[in-house]
Image 1 (cartoon, rainbow, N blue to C red):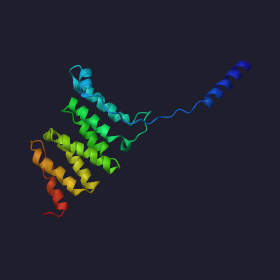
Image 2: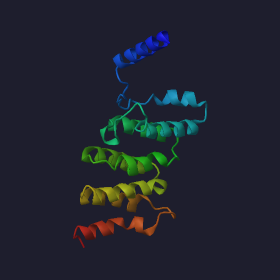
Image 3: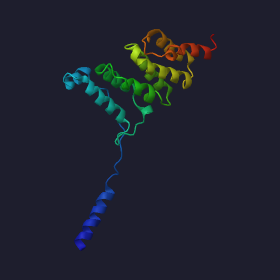
Length: 184
């Protein structure tokens, strides 16, 4: 019993001297080069893009990471989203995440950066990517109160998203923004 009590006391003493484990915040690193990802994909890059997107979105939720979305390095974030879209050009989720998650942070600089990314990516497939530009148009109008930027985005939708699946309300967003700007 004496040896058991001594072992227990030793265990308590050793554990009390150890530093408390804590989560360490790590920032998002740059993505690997596209050729490395394509090589790892073995000819089928879409599943790799899906896994990368899941990993990217889970980055903030990792128990070892405590950096919130608004503190991420948005240059690296945009590089990751671009890399994922280059592997899966038909994928919609990277732009959904950009316009709905990463653009909804209380940091105007980061909002503008990610919104500009969505705007640039829109032109690569306007008839499929218009919903995400419509979302950032709304963000520019209501959150940033930047009517000029909202009009620019809405005009791009009107001029370039001309497919039959683009609803009329999306094509007419510029008209409503002009009305809000008192430009009849």
